Amino acid sequence: MDQIKVGQFITRKRKEKNLTQEQLAERLNVSNKTISKWECGKCLPDYSIMEALCKELEVSIAQLLDGNEQEENPNYTQNEQVLKLIKDMEQLKKEKAIPKIYLSAIICAILGIALCLISTIFSGGKFEDFISGYFLGISIALILLSVFLIAYATVSAIKKNKRS
Image (cartoon, rainbow, N blue to C red; front, side, top):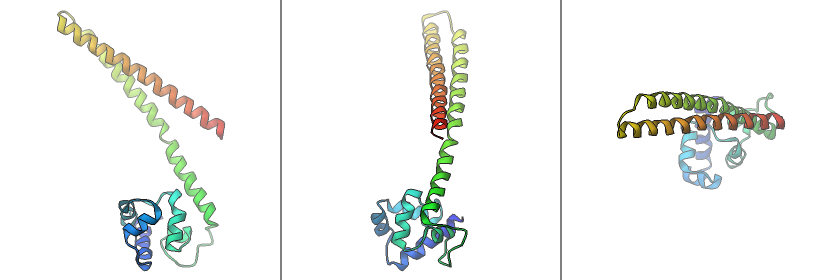
């Protein structure tokens, strides 16, 4: 699927319907900037709006994704199945975000430990003790945040596995 080709196809069909970007955006309840991004090939329409877009442009989802009006490819099936496939692909992208939570937790833990070690360097006067306490407080907060992030990611993963 070529985003630029799809964008050019959306532009051509919109102009054939004598619609401006603003008019199409209004009909789809999106911004004209969103239409512009589609037409420039910066992104593709979200699956949730694709069916309405195809209805406005009077094309099938398969034609939209191919970026042409030729005979529909026999490999494509009903619009609902294509939409389900796109939705499933977007869900898989979202599921890949969970490891980012673990990465964030690890970074927080490392920073927390580092600040804890730095806090031991400062000692002596009132100001040094204040800085030491400040760093120690931040380090404890970061370590607690990392524990929370790991727990949240683990619970989320368990819930998703139960649904599957």
